[in-house]
Length: 332
Ligand SMILES: Nc1ncnc2c1ncn2[C@@H]1O[C@H](COP(=O)(O)OP(=O)(O)OP(=O)(O)O)[C@@H](O)[C@H]1O
Image (cartoon, rainbow, N blue to C red; front, side, top):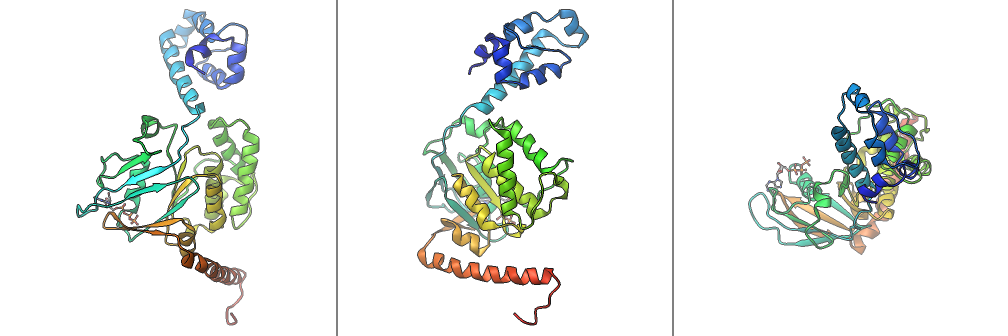
């Protein structure tokens, strides 16, 4: 819907489709009720004395409402589907060319490995910024094979990338359910209750220890809050690209977490040195001296080892649980 139509149709329809307009108007100390007049008529008939008492001019109110509605309409606009992300090589820290062009597709997982300071975060930042040769690496990022529309580059609503970082600090005094509910409402999803239930259920499947919907977010363990944010990212974020920084220390089911994002058809890039996650990826980018030094594609021999690694991981997990419950490990 266009902004002009929204101003001209009867308020009954406008407020039913965009209930947040009422909150916006009341936040200025005004009241608005659904009737057959239009939003334009409502604004035109506002009493100038009342506006003056509220310290408002009609033009100011109109401008703020335009900005607000434009933002809300942009949030509802369907995004262009991202079918591929191309990374065109730039140069490493010594100025040597990175000689490659990589195409990543939805549902694929790309792991990023390399020593501290090698440039892993820089690569993620190039993608987030949709670099056009204008970052220290000189890389270029294409979306669907083309220089991306400014929709992706400059919009704060339509973020190309959703990023999950290692540290989660909640400062709000809300329950897990209220927190996700608030997020779902701000995203204007059509069925927030259902989405919230789905996210809480999935987060509990990921978390090592269960939590209840009424658990305050500030009381969630590191693993539980990360599980909640991964489920939130999978089901609420419209960003087609997910960047994950080190999932391993989180105490959550890493495999399920990754599968959730893959199932939601995101392009996943993950900095990780966890062998299980690395082998689950479709490719690994090896970063050295600021450049992508090597691209390792998933191969059968490595994948066969995945099962062994999982067995080893389960054995370690069982030992961890024994330690946790106070047992000794003389007998393995
Ligand atoms: N190709 C490049 N040319 C110039 N500078 C670069 C290049 N790649 C990375 N850098 C710079 O090198 C520094 C270290 O890179 P970065 O922070 O990405 O490393 P990292 O691998 O993420 O390290 P850590 O594992 O410690 O987080 C940053 O200042 C980054 O901007």
